[in-house]
Image 1: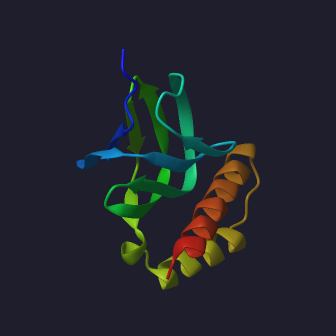
Image 2: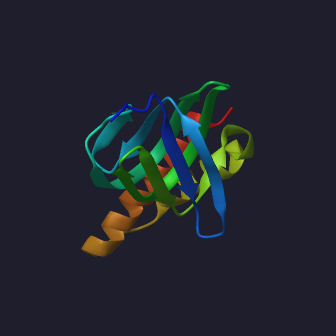
Length: 132
């Protein structure tokens, strides 16, 4: 069986399928670190983190902010299901700064509140890192 030189990326949000196209490579955040994907990788399922999805294809590089979710790789198809995906042009720096300030100022008492505060800070910091 011939090995494919491309992956098929399917990027899905609750509203729509954002991408369904061939790519040469991918890099994106898992909940516990970054991962890079090349063709012929072993199958996997993982939980997405917050941060930059970078893909390389024949037409160049594209970048999105992914907001958690799940990833599955089966064969040459990589499916990313995320709560939202934004291009760098869609990221509003002022809103991200406000989200970070609000999450830092929020009081957290219970374990769930502490976890939510930490998650919101991480998301806002990643948005700021990607904002133009």
